[in-house]
Length: 204
Image 1 (cartoon, rainbow, N blue to C red):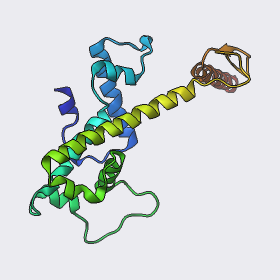
Image 2: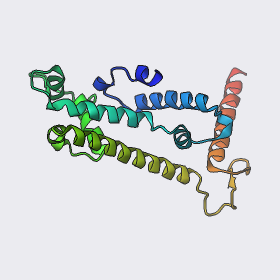
Image 3: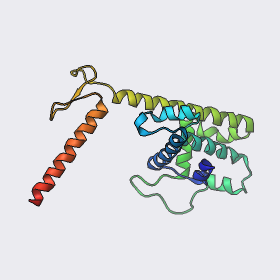
Image 4: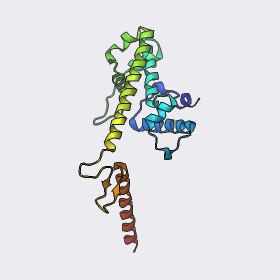
């Protein structure tokens, strides 16, 4: 009941990365409550999804969006096809970085799922083949996403060449941290402490 309510009207959404991030946070929190996982367990989101035997919320949206795109085989009088191929007769987009259009978002989804955007109508004529392309495209996107997350996680845990095994020294107080994330958190505490000292000096 939660996911359909959360994704109500997803067919007409034009999502940005910040909005996808909020949906992912809510989805992961729900799964953590179901699996009784807390932040103290230090379990990554990829493992939470594997334990729950589900895919990421972004992959769910893309798979269902691909299914909706498959309905372009409908006649030209249908509203969905008019919206999908519709354009404004007058006006033009602003300069710089204009807001993302629905067509741009659909094209990006198709490319990320390893589907040629120029062959959408031909694929949509075969309903069974279209569904199989949606499933394989979603699996391709989810696999690349997980590999990218694992690569970033390995990069965060890499230690400098001049540091001892498992030690990340702080340049301000020479404290040895056990991970790069711990070093970043320690440096953030130094920044907060310096800001508080500056505020106290201004008040005095």
